[in-house]
Image (tube, rainbow, N blue to C red; front, side):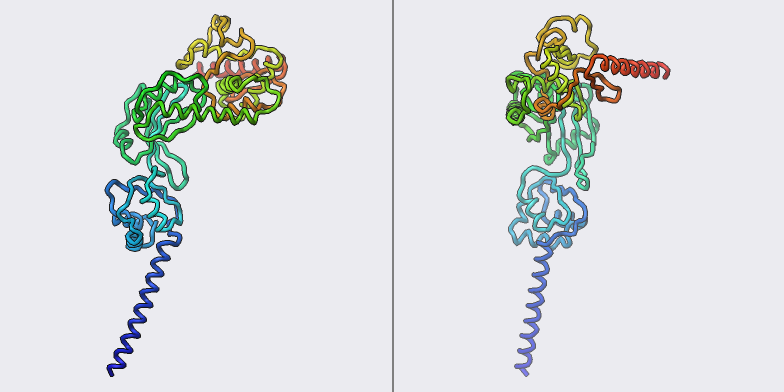
Length: 388
């Protein structure tokens, strides 16, 4: 009898052990296999959060199939106590193990809220935006102009959270003076800037920075990036261009940048000015004259006067031959590429066409017809405004 009891007990024990082994194998598969998440989500790990709280949040949102397995796996890998606060983008089908790795490895937040200080041609603004994890697009939460407005209610509370990323965005075509003055207003930066850098030497781009980042270090980064962009574009430039140096190409790029905001037109605009240079014609472009009037310190805010168009200055391309002595703004990469890879055209003129773009012409007769069309459009708009 005892022999039967022992035998039955051993059989039961083996069955239990096999069952436990199967359960452990199943749990391991649950931990390492792709997870159940159908759409990307943002996971915020708050400062001091526990693995239990995080596991419950993930389970309630359908990111993990079992909170207990998630916690047990993290504990087994000795990562349960190594949570790093922040906001994390969890992609669809991410495994429990991958999520644990994400939230314990640290590094910058990849999701959630972003504070953007944007330096623009016509002024600066501060933007708070949230990443929509399902589309990968940012949605504006709030915005204000730091020069003329106070932050909206609740803005600073949201912006001051430790896991909010900070970014400085420099718009194509701003001047070096505008960048320096703008960075002074970015309250999440620190330190002073050693004067205004050479015009055109800073790369317009979007720069992610840490809170307290040094302003001069950021300016140096912009310089290095612009230098690299220009060097690469110069090395791959088209043949036969009328530039003696990369600096002359940068001057042309800045003019192209200021003459059109339509990306598809940049190479055409560049071709007009290059054709004029090759024919010995004056460039006759208003943005250079405006730069000579403002010295790059803000926008003119009015039309050019006839006296300004006639006055001989180094930047008045209605008077001087060839290029002005320096760039008139900081051109973006696309404008630099256009200056060094212009379209092949015989265009010598262009004028606004009423749609935001320009009408191009090869002869003065064709150009005059385009100008007449533009003036008629302007007259119709003014008449319409008066009627309203």
